[in-house]
Image (cartoon, rainbow, N blue to C red; front, side):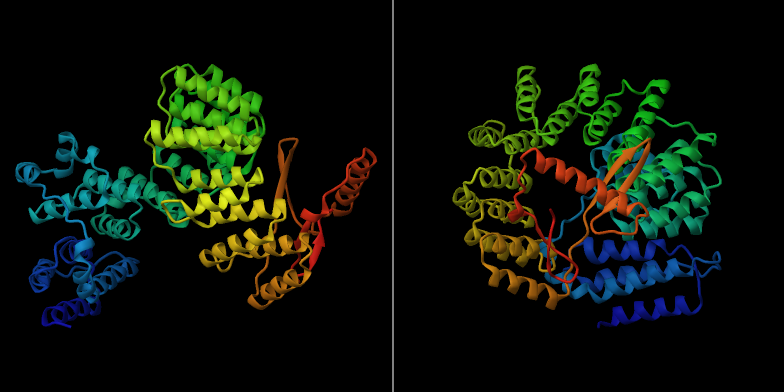
Amino acid sequence: MSYFQLRIITRLSHCVSRRFHSPTYCISLQFNTLLAHKPCTASEESLEKALEILDLISPQPGKEGSGNKHMRLIEGCMEALIKTDSRQEKKGRLRKPKEPTAISDKISKRSVAFSGYEKDGYYKNNSDANDALTFFFHMRKQGMKPDEQTLSSVLSACGSERVYNLGTQLHAISVHSGLDLCISIGTSLVNFYSKCGDLDEAYQVFEGLLEKNVVSWTALIAGFAQQGQGERCWDLFLRMQFSLSRPNDFTYASLLKACTGIGSLAEGRVIHCHTIKGGFHSYTHVANALITMYAKCGSIEEANYMFEETEIRDVISWNAMIMAYAHHGLGDEALYLFREMEKRAIEPDAITFLGVLSSCRHVGLVEEGWHYFYSMVCEHKIDPGLDHYACMVDLLGRAGLLDQAKEFIRSMPILPNAVVWGSLLSSCRLHGDARIGSWAAQHRLLLEPGCSATYVQLANLYAASGSWEEAARVRKLMREKGLRTSPGYSWIEVKNRVYKFKAEDRSNPRWVEMIWVVDSLVKQMKSLGYVPDTSLGLDLNEEGGFIDCY
């Protein structure tokens, strides 16, 4: 460790011992700039500048409870110092931030730097959080104090880029400067934590706001919707009804996403009524959310009605309806809609072709699948993603073309992921090909060694092909590794209430009645001549033994 590093650590330790909570936000942020963003050809010079930054900080008593945030800043600084040498070795992979030379001249003439940036259009055209923070650092070098709009803009950048560590440091800035109580800063913090997935912190900040507006309500609802917590979204919406804030189009779009996540058609229809009452149903992004909600909640007719009633359709509208048809196995309708899209000169994107390929996969249209795959690559110049390759593998595999699927994977220009290998494994289980199936399982386990589903599929494949010794070996291996399958869930909505069911769960008080209904259905199916394919009905229980799903 160099002399300069020792000096900085000594100064930081002195700051901690005195429990000072001065404007510490510049410490770690400036360290990240000096030690990571700048070329590390002269680390001693960078560390000397870091010392100058420390010299500008004067000890001041802070607010109670901010010690933990300050400690995180100190730890971040020390970690940055320790990693300086390793960063020097990797300097070729670091992106040098753009020098804001043209804008720096304007900074000295303006009291609010970031508002000037936004007026000049730079920040709107560059959503990279590092570039936004570079402006922030440059502003601080000019001796300007961050104001409400500045911190709000930088927090928005951190949320968009999911830069959690820097965002928490900016939170510390706002707390120290007292700006955290401002509605714009509080809302930006709720939005930042929600986008980064820290819903506990987002909810804590939200509850601490003295004044809540529609943006803060919507940000929190959107965060819970993103994490699939639809019940929490509904509770927040009910609370919002009794507040002074009125939902807007973005609020309703987030609520519709929440209804989609939990499969609640009744609540989705309620939100639809609210959008009509508020006049938001004609907004394109709200209509797109309604199409997706109805489709994923099982009402393809209402999804089609919303699509036909949408006056202004964008590519997302067409994608939503194509995906809806694909989800319901209506491949012909999806392909017809895609041809209509082409007739209207609407340029498809990667998601459009993903829906088209999924439609071909569901109905087994192999030749059409190849046609649209090559059209995507050659005509529309769209690079296929892993999802597109997985669709093609599944399409070939379901059609029994396992050797073609294998060669297709080998010819991929990018490394296949677990989904691609899982698609091939599922197809091998469907057609009883243990040779290619074991090959696919081995590659998938290299990517996900702890995936119990892969072991279950492989054991079922061996059992279906009569290789009971191999199936027993896989079961033994699962027991030795302590792997257990995740229970499957299903749900049904009855009288506006969603009921969830878990495999082998006997805790439901009406368990006996449910088993009786299932047995009655099985008997009725058999009386009509249905013969179950038990070769695909094997699964593993918690003890690692086989159970019969039929």
